[in-house]
Image 1 (cartoon, rainbow over the protein chains, first blue to last red):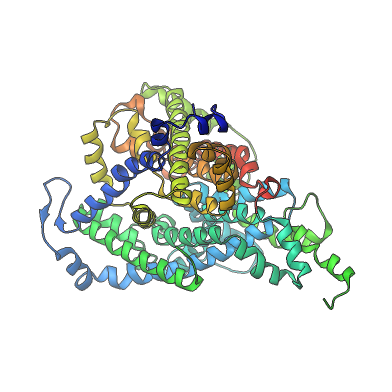
Image 2 (tube, each protein chain N blue to C red):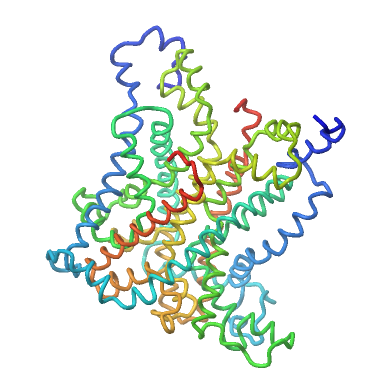
Length: 311
Length: 299
């Protein structure tokens, strides 16, 4: 209806009704309605539940700060395994995946269109299918008997004599989990960076080289990255969110819940355990509030590191 | 100005290496780095494809072989014919899934782009506050919201209806964030110029802003498709009527019930059926993801 009206027409017939249609609220309102009912409201209810005992059957009973106090003082699985594992996972896979995403996006931008498209699909594909589904593949790959692809391959090469139990040793599980995490980290942030790099105007580069830019490293740090700051920030936020969101990788790899010696036990695993195995929704909600605070803290730090971001 | 002009010309060539038209031997170094990366990233896709077409006896074979020696469609036939037992034909699940995905893509793109436009270009009350809420929502891990969501949806009376698939997926905070980030790169002069020419806010959105953020729209479309197409939660928790459930849920019920090695082939075939439309959509939209705005008079 608006599309067909030409520019001139609107200027001449700007009635009060049209002015009202031109209000900013019409643009934000449709989204705001769905955002409040299906996002904010759920977060609020979940936060309220964190102050209750709730077994999903009976009506939640108010317990004050008990969930939070238990979390901080009695939950040894959280303090010993979930929290340190999650932070270590996030610190390695977050920045690692972020840099890998940028590097691969930058390399893809240097090659012709057709090869780039195919490569982009392949690189994005692990993030495209649900991550846990894909860990099935890695489970077969790292399988501990001689049927496992990696064992079979190494046995044939003569590197090892007996099959290695890749998925028994907690340290090995952690390393494999980090690998799977990095492998599936080229998600939407990667796509945004790719289009960000490709959208930079050639003339900016030309002008910079005339001004004395010497090599490609300077080009990346003085031209490419500053020209795509919005996409870099988006990539950083997505890297932080997706690493703290990660769950179930170690369980899917080892086929046991919880995994041997709690290796690779992440906060969201802990949450799922309380919410869906023990039906302590109140406690699970308290965990999600604590996780939100941790994520906010880390994104604040990341923003500080980036420096001078306006948001 | 110490450098001779010839040197300048040579070095300005570097920037031109971004988005090249054709193959050049200077690109070899990138292929050398890219090849092993692609090999590792590709492994699971190849695995799924080869497993999906593997006959049962080869799944048990020792030594394990990556590629099947005899290609079979048994796994797919099993997936499609098993439906007869439940009474709902395979096509019905497929139809539901396609309809849900199409509606979710269209509506969520519309809502997110309108909102992002407001955040980037317009002023309204609570703008900063609302954007902060949006950022926080992105960071909230929605594990314990299944029960609250059920409460909200039953209050709205959309449990066990087709809308249950669509409505909860429409608000995409990530989509708004990404679109806003792209819109922030559009020069404000463009907006002002259009305004002076007499365009109203909707016309500027429709004719100037949307075409310039096509890469972001394409990216969000891929994301929205994924969230709808891979969704099993809605069919599992909010839908009782079997005829309203979607394809991934149906596959899940099939693959969860069978023994582990025999299920490998079927679940690989199921993954492939779920996976292929993602790739097709990506190929259709990639022109936009990798679209360059350099020619559209930007900056």
